[in-house]
Image (cartoon, rainbow, N blue to C red; front, side, top):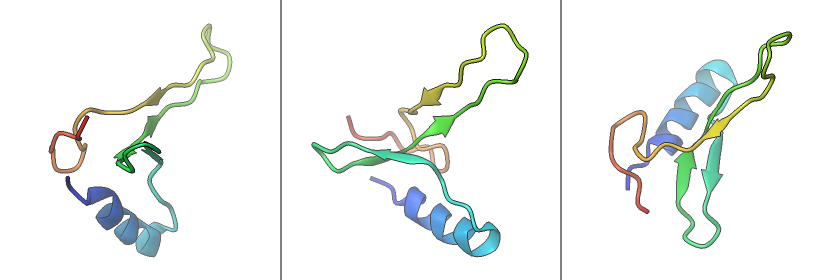
Length: 65
């Protein structure tokens, strides 16, 4: 499994004081990047989404199941 979450977080914390949203499976301990969206005020469906990709968005490696 790749360690892109750690590498990217180290870089952006130093440069921008921000970090990636991620989720960790408590049974396996595997962390994945979480892609979150937010609703735009005034639109018909004001709902945000929380997406968990199957592949690392940085290196393209498939996350373990």
